[in-house]
Image (cartoon, rainbow, N blue to C red; front, side, top):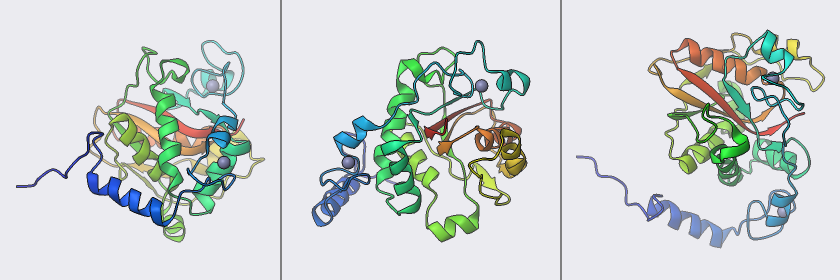
Length: 252
Ligand SMILES: [Zn+2]
Ligand SMILES: [Zn+2]
C-alpha cells in the first residue's frame, strides 16, 4: 500500500522544505535581477515590476478600452476564454523572465509562479472566471517546448511555472497534456500577428484523457497570444471544456 509523503502544515513534503533550507544555507538565495542577497526576487525589484494594468481587452489582454472585446477577438475569436498576465515584459519583469529562460535560474520559477497564482486568484482584475470571482480550472498545463529545445536547456521554464502555479492554487499539473509536434521558427519581435499565427498553426497536439476538464494554460511570456491560441485549440480538440491562459508577462 502506498503511503502519502510526510507533509508539513503547509502541505509541502517536509523533506522538500528541509532540502530547500539546506540549499539556502549552502547557496544563499540572490536576487536574479539585481544580485542582492536574501531572495530570488528582492522586495525592491519585486515592487518595481511594471504591471499590465487595465483597461485591456477582456479576452486577449491587449491594452485599450474594448467592450465586449477587441476587433481581432471579435473577428477571429481565440480558442481560449481569457488570457491574463500580471506584468509587462519590461524592466525587472523582463529580467526575471530572461533569468529563468536563459540563465538557468530555475529556482526563480517558484516565486514567479506564486505571483502569477496570486494574480489569478485575485477577484479583480484577473477575470479568468466567467463569474469574475474565482478561478475556474481543474488542472494546469504548461506550453510545451520541442524535445530538442528542452534537452538543450535542460528544462521547460513554462513547466516549472505551471508546477509553482499549480502548487499555490492547489491544482494538479499535467505536463504531458500537450506535445509540440514541430519546432517553429523563433517568433521575431517584428513579426505580425498573422505571421505569428502561421508559425504555430498545427504545432501542438492535445493528448487524450482531458474530456470535460477546465484547463489553466501556463506560459512565461505572451505577445499576440498566437502560441497560447494554438495550444488552446489543440486542448479543445482533445476534449477540454474550457481553456484560460496565464502568462507571467505580456509584450505590449
Ligand atoms: Zn533585486
Ligand atoms: Zn482581444
